[in-house]
Amino acid sequence: MSSGADKIVSNINSEAQAKADGIIQEAQTKADDIIAKAQEDAKVESEKILADGQKQADMRYQQIISEARMNQRRAELGAKEEVIEMAFTKAMDDLKELGSTTDPKYVDALSKMVKEAAMEIGGGDLTVHVKDSDKAKVESTLSSIASDVSSKLNVTTTLEFGEPINTIGGAIVQTKNGDIEVNNTIESRQERFKKSLRSDVAQILFK
Image (cartoon, rainbow, N blue to C red; front, side, top):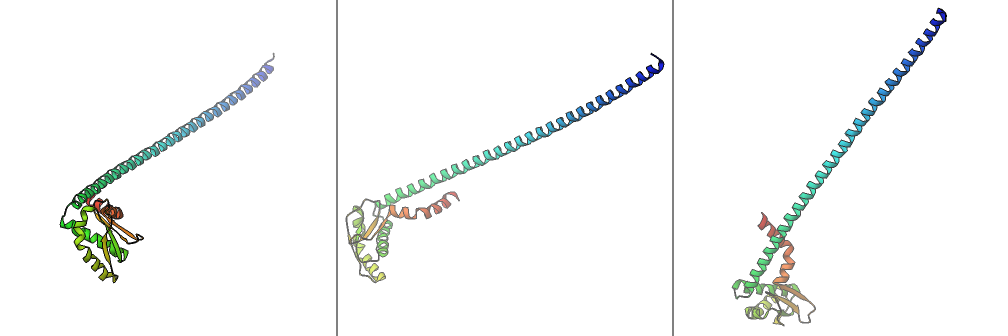
């Protein structure tokens, strides 16, 4: 091969090599860019997963704390309710004991409960029901109670005993025909006033 031909072949090889080198360099650059982007995407995704995990962990923590506080509140309310019920039970036991005596405080309260019931009915000919042992405690005051009710309501009123009732104390008063009745026993009064009394008892016990 002549020197001229050698030179031409050499130039072709050089140009081919340069193009090959360029292609390889471009391919390497693109590969590096792809790897870099993939690494960045992986980092972002990893941070997102961690952030989501942290968020879920925080939410679960708050949920656990909220449930714990709610359970604590329920326990406190349950304990307070138990103490309040114990207070009511103790009060009823004390009233039952008082009602079995001739203590002037109970006798006076019994007369007032009879009068209160007669007033609520509106007077007239009424029947008074008390437990057997209470008849003697209020028998002497029935006529004066009737007179007082008559005077206050301007309605002629009479009171007489009916059948005895099973109660720890207090009275049931009704019209002769039984159409109207006012239950003023201690048990009934407690049930009627328990809601408002509960608030008062709670304030006394837990102030």
